[in-house]
Structures are given as C-alpha cells and as structure tokens.
Image 1 (cartoon, helix red, strand yellow):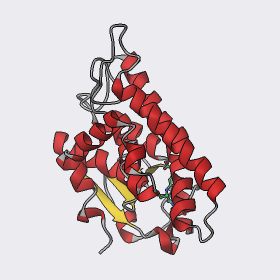
Image 2 (image 1 turned 30 degrees about the horizontal axis):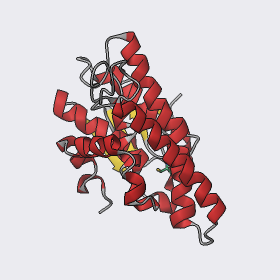
Image 3 (image 1 turned 60 degrees about the horizontal axis):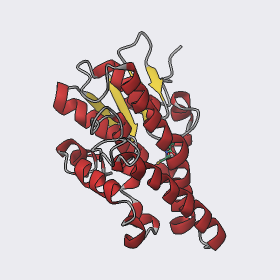
Length: 247
Ligand SMILES: N[C@@H](CCC(=O)N[C@@H](CS)C(=O)NCC(=O)O)C(=O)O
C-alpha cells in the first residue's frame, strides 16, 4: 500500500527519491534538520526537503495525514523501501536515520548501555520536556488571555526539566570524588555528541523566547555552556538558517 496518493500529494513529495523531509523550521523540525545536516557533513548523505507552512494547516490535509495521522511536522519518507515508508515523531525519526545512515556510529554508540543512555535522554526531552515547553509557548506567547496559574505551573515544570539536564551535564552525582562535568548528555566520561543532544537542543535554546529570565537561566551554568557548544557547530547553524526558511 502506498502512502502517496497520486492526486493529492505535492509533486516534490511524490517524485522524491531517497530520504525526503517534510518540515517547517520549528524546534521539532529543527531536530531532524540538524541530524540530516550532520549526516550530510559526516557521510555526504543526501536527502531532499519540502517546506510547508503549518499556519495554513497543510499538515491537516489528506495527503499529509496519509503520511502522519498525527497531522504534525516533521515527517520523513524513506523512498528506498519497496513502498515509500513514512516515519513520524521526531525521536523515532532520529533513531530511524541513525540506523539507516550513521554506519560509523559518529552520533550514536556501539556499547548497548551507552546506547540505552542516549535513548533515555532522547525520551526525557520528548516525553517530559517538549510537551511542557509547547504549553509554555502557547500560554506565554500565543494565548490572548494570560493565565498566571497556568503559566506558573508549566514554566515551573519546564525549569524542573532544565534542572534535570543541568544535573546530568554538571556531573554532580557522577563521581564519588566530586562533580565531573560533561560536555554532552549521553556516553561515558564527558559524553559524546549524539541524537540525544540534537533532540533536546532546539527547544532548550528557545528559553529567552518563552519568558524565562537570565537570572533563572543562571541557575543552569552547565546547560548554558552546552547550548553554546552545540550552537557553534556549522551543521547546526545551517539547520537553523535560511535554507529552511519559507521564501
Ligand atoms: N511529538 C511530535 C510533535 C510534533 C509537533 O508538535 N509539531 C508541531 C510543530 S513544532 C506542529 O506540527 N504543529 C502543527 C499542528 O499542531 O497542527 C514530534 O516529536 O514529532
């Protein structure tokens, strides 16, 4: 069964070969944009992209719902399978691309325990970070009525999860002899840059935009350094740049 209906599906999606990304440059879109850009640099990995505008509700049309019944971006389609194979949900997309393209484990781990740690941090943000961050953005920025109780509740929960990331990156509990700061969320020692970082970074970097103050953020010095460390990577800058902006 094909997920690509002949009449409804845009030409560039229908005619794509290889991996095709349908995205808008939101934090969720940026997770997958970053990983594809990293794979491009590391392996000359190739893919194509369709940019959509979610404010027009393109993601609720039949052609899109065939690919992702959840009606949200981003989605990837693997056209190398017998029938084009769609993948929804950002963390599942990162893991799919990992097993497809990261042959040398540059952004993942061969050791099963380190791999598990990577998946744990990927899920931490997917399940406990992004849903609250999304609510903070809605109630602080988009909602016409500003509801103090709701804003406080979701902001406090977001700050709590920032603190979970800070605990991990500070290495506060990692060594019996004292703190052992880490550079990245998963992996032995100071850690290794992996999909766990890529799945978390585009959201956390929005802290200022969501009404969190400099003073609140100063409670998380290791998280701030981690934000800067990842932002300095050229593939990350490309993934956040004009290439993914609507013309
Ligand atoms: N859990 C989903 C969330 C995806 C998501 O919420 N995408 C937003 C953009 S950041 C979207 O498509 N919003 C449009 C809509 O809700 O109609 C994932 O990780 O892929």
